[in-house]
Length: 358
Image 1 (tube, rainbow, N blue to C red):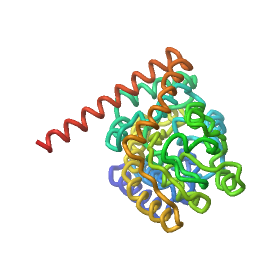
Image 2 (image 1 turned 135 degrees about the horizontal axis):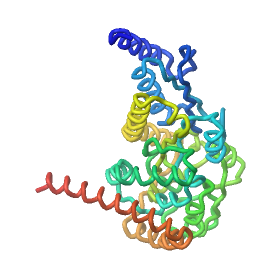
Image 3 (image 1 turned 120 degrees about the vertical axis):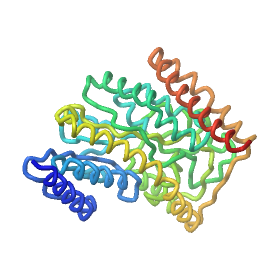
């Protein structure tokens, strides 16, 4: 194949991908098809990232690798189901939070230790830390018996806050007696319990009806996720405590990845890195619309004072000790790597600020 032919095919794939806007396209004869799944809807940043990934991979491989995007529970409905689908070969790419990824590597829940990250810059640099990413990739491969490959680390919505439909939360005591939806992650459930609330694990796509029917009083989600799923129609109070940053990881079937040529593997890896960048970049813009939607629906926003934040941190402090006791040496190893990445990020941010603010 001549260089001009390759270029022509690449341009054709790029145009076709852009025109399709993520819809199903007939794959070229002999092309490798990748089924990409995320469980949110098309308003979520995962959709934008998936579109970019699809365009990048299809154009750079000249259509030799195509990407089919599945939104919501079309191929699987939960983290456990999606990881099993990856092992079975039905799903090739899937994105999960740290809580979801705990299904294959339990110590990864250490990323949800409350109040471990101080601000957006530190959070982004931590999740983009090469040493930390490589560490997690190695452990995920090991724990999944070489079945699941970590493609890239990113975020999916920003900061988790306490939101509910009953009352304003100013201190941990205000959480007492409220039922909060959580995922099946013990570290997240314990946070609610430490503050006197009742954690209630519910699949993501069932949360709206659970709020509507009173099964739960609130959620621990970012404002973007709340707006995307129209939870603002059911809740009216949100407290900006930022107890966790919603880390997210794109995973790929390792069998599928190993079946690609070295050139295709590099393109897929680079496409994964691009997905990560897109999700970090688009989140602040999506939050603008999300906050506007929240306010227009009559929702109230409470920003805790520093004294109140100290109360939240104190209430959550036992969770780190529980984590280390629960996960033993594997937990110590993970938390050491995570906290080292956080420290490197803090030092980098502080250095940059110091250089500018002389």
